[in-house]
Length: 142
Image 1 (cartoon, rainbow, N blue to C red):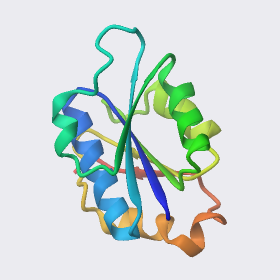
Image 2 (cartoon, one colour; image 1 turned 180 degrees about the horizontal axis):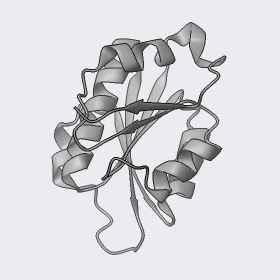
Image 3 (spheres, rainbow, N blue to C red; image 1 turned 90 degrees about the horizontal axis):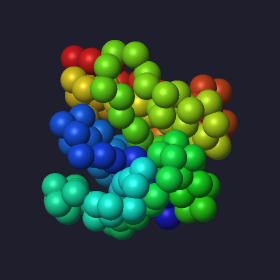
Image 4 (cartoon, rainbow, N blue to C red; image 1 turned 90 degrees about the vertical axis):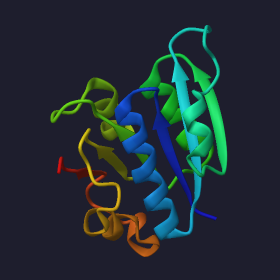
């Protein structure tokens, strides 16, 4: 079965990112794996609001966020990685993931519409997934 990996944090943008990942997973009939990366060993629990995200599974990792998200994606053979950015420009974590991911990456802006089907659907079509020429799909701010 297909797997969408969603890199989440405890920001307001994190809720938008999870909604976009859930919508993409639902459209593709894929499992949703929430991955929270902490840079310290304190606060290792996934924030409580992630419990209602409709995820199939949750993972908490420690270390550099981009590296850990990529490792989990590779380890679970994710077919799509969904991460967020807090501004109209990509942050370093999103940039690092987009440059090094072995599958398509959806980068969700703070005001993105999680139901933006025309942007996500063609890139996550199962037949097109492996032959995608561009690894980054951006949901623009509304």
